[in-house]
Length: 247
Ligand SMILES: Nc1ncnc2c1ncn2[C@@H]1O[C@H](COP(=O)(O)OP(=O)(O)OP(=O)(O)O)[C@@H](O)[C@H]1O
Image (cartoon, rainbow, N blue to C red):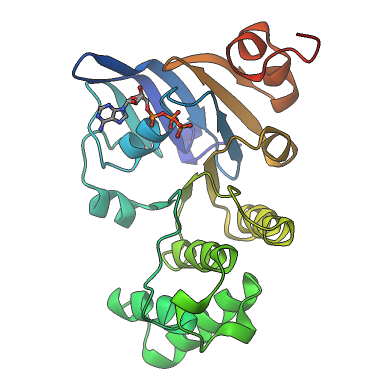
């Protein structure tokens, strides 16, 4: 499925990025369709986080173009991109540690001035229930477990009703039960809100199970892209990342 006008929701075309002598990303092109989960895999240092930073405007690419819904977004600031519907989670979950779980959602809703206090409180409560944290509404975020903070961070990305959520290692170090909740929330957000996801993870079996498409980077370049089962069967992906079980 694609965004209005037939364009993919997000497209990367010939993206390149160099840090002094290091080529971190080289000529990367792929797209994220509307209402889809795209998994991004690759060895350590293959450019995955750099690419997320480029998509949400933290870094500017040296070459190439990014489009959201057909409109060029290359080089725009993270705050502008957030307003256009690109949000992000991080390797270490970012929440307001001194606020309660409820306030973590309520405060951004009020800040946007999109809703009055009553509806904002109801939406915050709905989002907490969605990620299974309703019993923890009044607990200060720093008292929540790492996995619960990750769920709270996820709920916070949904406050703005994003078009695409970028997630960096969402499953790293989380309890299997939290992982199951997170996967369910991601799939339901696709189905109910029509959002898309670009997810970086080393947990390849989980990503294969939940993604509509996958992209594998090796040494900053696209080694394979397509359906998950096809990507993980490619020689370049096995040689460059997964390794051979008989090796
Ligand atoms: N700010 C920076 N300055 C210099 N080099 C950087 C910077 N950020 C990333 N790099 C280099 O760019 C390359 C890609 O790094 P990146 O963090 O994007 O890889 P990754 O695939 O996300 O790795 P990991 O799976 O370990 O998180 C690496 O060689 C890294 O050392």
